[in-house]
Image 1 (cartoon, rainbow, N blue to C red):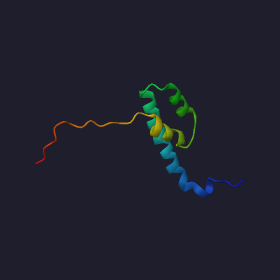
Image 2: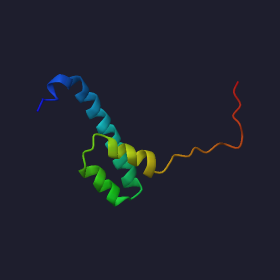
Image 3: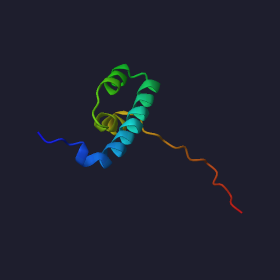
Image 4: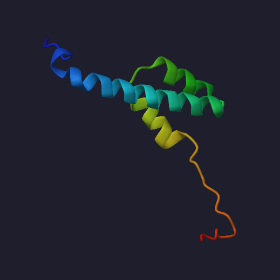
Length: 75
């Protein structure tokens, strides 16, 4: 079985950073929405960012921006 890590060291850090950012954001959103089972699954399973990405895209609440009734005047 070939060793994957020595040949692809340049890939390790970006994947690690992406995993940390996605997992942290997904855990934060699951905790704020009091979704206990999602929080546990996201915390325990290491899926290289796949599960947090699925949660953020399909199961978390979308952000809706409110539009003001009056348009702002710029000078």
